[in-house]
Length: 125
Image (cartoon, rainbow, N blue to C red; front, side, top):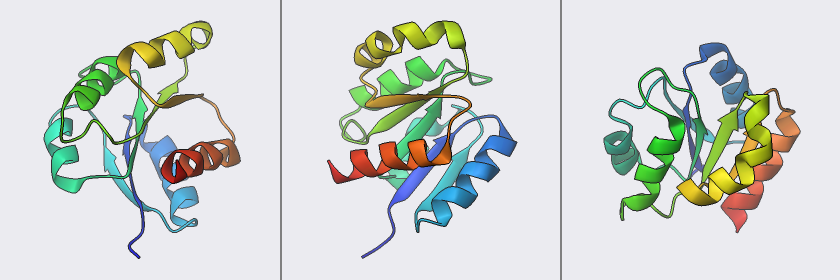
């Protein structure tokens, strides 16, 4: 059985490297994009099993990208977990996730086990 593919879209390279090491230790295949540019086409082609998406990207709002992913019939079924570092947004995250159809969110900084639990729960659902 092939490894599950997880796409991380985040402009923080250091965060990506740390998450990648943790995910690969759990036998996930990790893909990476630093921006939203070309993301939808990339997702259609690579067909990741789950997407970890930062809200603040250099070229597009992560909410908008999530909504686009969920509106596209080729990518709508892929679970999306939003990353947020903005503490003032945490109160509204449940509402925002519903609006853009994200499956879940995680606040930065986070414990790697919390992230792994969310990923496992979504991939096994």
